[in-house]
Length: 201
Image (tube, rainbow, N blue to C red; front, side, top):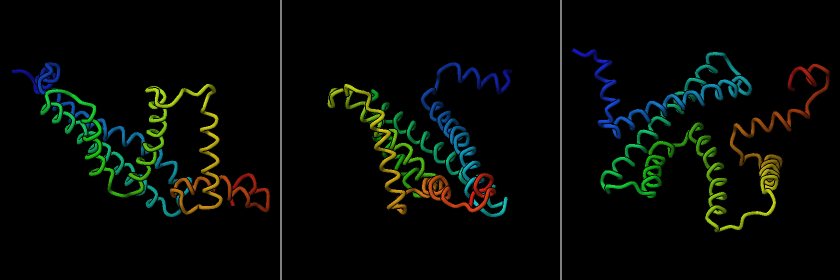
């Protein structure tokens, strides 16, 4: 009689139920990737900017990591599940399936407001705007720039973000506001060598 591991390995190698198993593997990969990305980020940001007892800091890190990991796992599971079902129902894979599946799953998983979801959605927004600009050039909707546009892109991004920080601070996301306060406001505060070089404020 074959060992359970051997039986499972044969099933996985056979290609049977591949679509359904790929959905489960997506759930696993979403959980792992979410934890890998969020844990170090939460660790650094918490110890840099959060005050209070160590137990509170650890709880903040664990909660952020769990939320990111769970939500990404659920999103991948939902997205892959819906695209698989739609492709099966229509007997082919269509571009519209990607948008519709992500739209529905994004609403259900990332539509609930919390700090982690806000950061993920903002991260994606910047990437898709950049991607859409490239797509517009690739498709010929926009003429390819003669000179490299990246310096102008960088100048605009930094010009707008510093203008918002200096004059409309309340419009910025809290973590960005904290980072910019440390860089641009706290660097104005010193009255001795210790808080000039060694300590902030």
